[in-house]
Image (cartoon, rainbow, N blue to C red; front, side, top):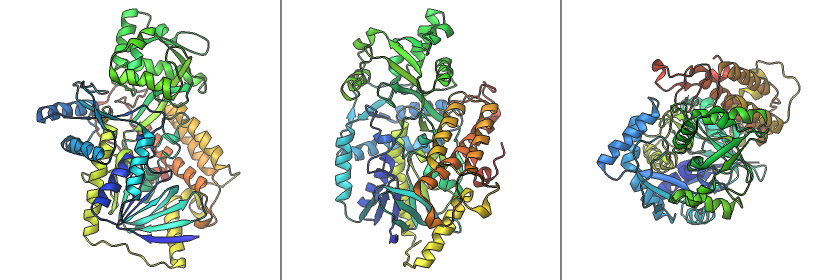
Length: 561
């Protein structure tokens, strides 16, 4: 069954960025549709196994300068300073807007030194996901001129020439396929954690926007820069690990009971100094000497990815006085039923967030006219390292900016109003899918298709490959093995008889394979170590590579490292 609808603006994704964009468009009186593969208030910004969201803002102009300096130092030449300055100029008003929607935003008494920052800044936090989800969902659902499409999978981006004309979504709960016609599409679907076996995301965070934007003609940028942080394997699988707890790490024990960290750092003073440095940032970075901790952890976990490494804490952690650590310890006990010193806790490196994504300009526009991106799926804003809290803040600031830009584009009169014609609409879907999924169409496949695998089996294999070879430690041999393996998995996708016959699991799997190739190519091509990208075969920074690197459609059609 097929349905067609017309809107001023269509927003894909209902995390913090998508919800912000939706509220801004509704405030302006626009006819809006917000679609999500999950439900409203989903994605990484509402991750259930996270105690709170943090966001920082400058106090004054002097603090703005220090903040921008911190961002530039951490970004190591990869970040967009114009967008970073825009963030600093607008973050406070956007935090106030979030509070005006009913979100319980609290300002901490003490300033906090964010991950990778050299100066402490004003810190805001919010938590209580069920309450926030209810407040925002009720508010949006009661708004005029908004249509909400939950459990709607982004299957395609409709274009005419180099202009966006709408999207194709498939309903998870019924056999419906909808064509949502519009002149302005905002992509806000988050990162791509579902490419990895161990990730701190929900399953809908799979990179659909990035894959489809790429295949539609937009570029992806900085895909090699991703945040990996330790996460819980057990108990409470996929629970966020707070970096401050590293201060109290007494031992890291592998499956045989060997203390792998003390064996790597036998000197007690060096051991404590490295733990102190590591406790100041959540994500892994190649920029600091404490990278040894994450590399040691990963090397041990590779031997038994489902078991991981046991972390044993000193009892002194229970006397921790910093409020954000106190809150974390209490949250673990109350919400996750985990005693930080009493329970056997096993950890491993988890994919947490993407620093790169769809290349956007200074108004959140992509290279496709009428197509905009914000939040974690947008790329080019952040650098090789991203300051703690800037991800959530960017969802607010650039969710607003993308909405404003999209609405201005609508005001130009670039209409995509459409009258339903079943035959013509099916042709639109067919052409859209042939552009987006060449691996599913016989005339575009370069292989002689053999035995097809179930999409779920392919995804499991993909996730294992990515976790093993595109994790905190990378090298050409492993990345090329992974790229070849992903290309082989792509050949095992079943062929399409027609667009209307393609299932959501198959389309999603094809998207993930496309994006995985792009990510691996970016990692292969950056032959240096910089920020969150570490190459054991190129362990040092290359001054000639201090710039963003893009991946385009042809790169994944014919992957050449």
